[in-house]
Image (tube, rainbow, N blue to C red):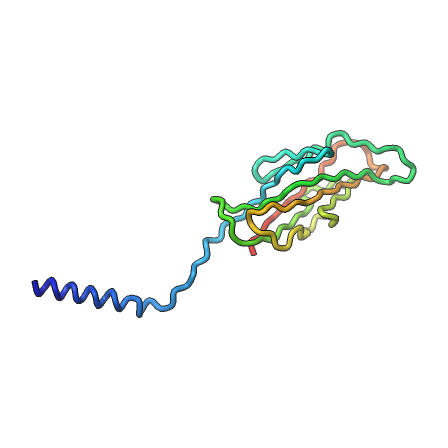
Length: 162
């Protein structure tokens, strides 16, 4: 019985001593996970957005220039939603969202929310909360002098956690 009592006393002393040596506890942030971009259709009569995971295609349908002497470009606008997501559906933190032209069609000028987009990355959203939906407007201007045919412009998007 005395042996059991000594073991119990030693165990209690050890349990009481552990917090004294553990030092200061620190909050641990969730592990950094890669962010993904999800495109969301916003109803519009101008164009259709087809989504597949983090990819999206905009079908502008048939666009034709109305023969007006003062018009030098044909402009198409499409509103769409962007949601930043984390694997597993976690919704904490913020991100910076950028876009750039991955494939440039020299016949078109591409803008997002009025900002011209080129081959260098342009900040689209400076601080967007992960999990929320942000609405943006894509604008494509094609000069009336451009040759007819499908546009081959392609945008590359990136979200970086802050």
